[in-house]
Amino acid sequence: MKHIFEKYEPVIGLEIHVQLATASKAYSADATDYGAMPNTQVSPVSLGHPGTLPKVNEKVIEYAVKLGLACNCTIREHNEYARKNYFYADLPKGYQITQDTTPICTGGHVEIKDVDGNPKKIGLTRIHMEEDSGKSIHDIDPFNTLVDLNRAGTPLLEIVSEPDFKNGVEAYNYLSEMRKLVRYLEISDGNMEEGSLRCDVNVSIKPIGREKFGTKVEVKNLNSFRNVQKAIDYEIKRQYEVLEGGGTVVQQTMNFEAASGKTVLLRAKEDAHDYRYFPEPDLQPVLVKQAYIDDVRSQMPPLPKELYEKYRQLKLNDYDASLLTESKEIALYFEQIIEHTQNYKAAANWMMGAIKSYLNDQAIAIDEFPIKPATIAALIKMVEAGDVSNSAASGELFRKLIEEPDADPRKLAEVNNLIQESDSDALQVLIKQALAKYPDKVEQYKAGKKGLMGLFVGEVMKLSRGKADPKITNKLLQEQLEK
Ligand code: ADP
Ligand code: MG
Image (cartoon, rainbow, N blue to C red; front, side):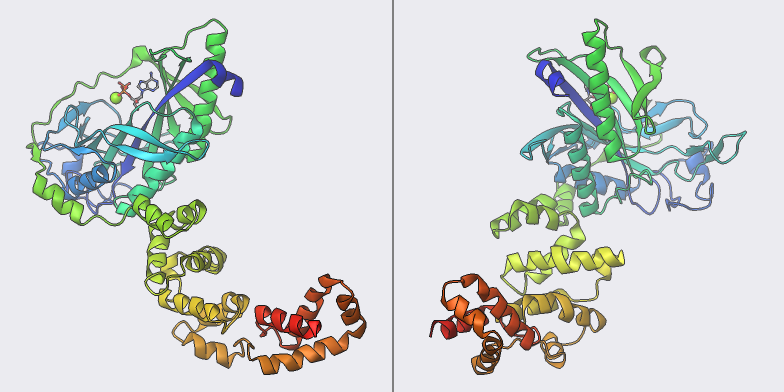
């Protein structure tokens, strides 16, 4: 692809739909549970039957404001609703209630990493509230399309980015960042597989240096972050070949076929919908007042970026700080450990080492992890004081604690004989024994073969059954051998 980027500059914009984790739908009291029996969560309101009226779910406003604040957007005071009309089997009302000219959030940005790992700001054009359609199911009945309307009316936020992306990697990183954000805010589960996060991409390329954008192609039906990246890279290459072959890029909507990794024509511009937007007559505009925004702001949880910066300030490196803030639950557990210890690096090592690998092995989340953060901090202190070795603490003692999470770690270490031998008298005895075992090696050491130190330390460790403090052992051995 490098030769393409020497001549052309890609311009890419993303449209994300986030399904909100509200208990009820956007404009009715129907439940929104995923995986419920088909067509059990549909009232006449969701069906748009005559005589029914929609009602705004206040949670949707709160969630939109939360996301807007997290993305540094301007929040609109006067919010109107609009009808977007089209005919489809899974759209029972024949229209979607959405926002057209008055999106609740505008401007703002999200910070991502570019291909080189440097920070880059992606601008947001708008975030607006709308409702989902039902689901058409084509793969159960061989002759008919089945329709499940449970999803119809589930609240969505549509997030439209500025055309600020240059390649597939940036789009991938942006999606990861957005998913992290909605999960931190607890406004969506962000699962792409279950359709809670959906993404359409818009791709065009232009010769380097030209102001005017090229003709864009929209790619839909992307069901994973990887496929978003692949579809973008494929489109850039396809458009490059069209232009280099003397052709022109046609404005169209494409489908991404995961199996072949290619984009294929879905519809040309001539078939573009005319949605006949008009103001929703059944809903009053909603006023989002500054006092309300301030109230929502005061209830915002810590955001990944804030925590990342805090951890960098605590002298953790980029790698540790990024991993720790990957999920809110992990970050919050870490926060609790460091309430009890200032050894941040050790706390990070515990999180990313023993704890993470235990979670992975057991395939559980941190909220199911039995050991309390304060106990981890106590282990860190015991290692610092030289009472237990790091390997004993993160190995045997850690395993014992998982079985008995409420036990006192120090008592557990004593009972299991894990307290480190730092008493130098006892150690001296072992050192003498060890050296007596290898008289010729001692001679060789004294003659300059300093590499033999490892052998002696190893022997002392063996005699102490792993409880000798390696540092002290080393020092005492040196003294003994220099005599
Ligand atoms: P439409 O009217 O087709 O919906 P919009 O102007 O609303 O188009 O933009 C939809 C998305 O496409 C946005 O994310 C925007 O940043 C992006 N976009 C707009 N123009 C281009 C272009 N020439 N190339 C790539 N992406 C673009
Ligand atoms: Mg648009």
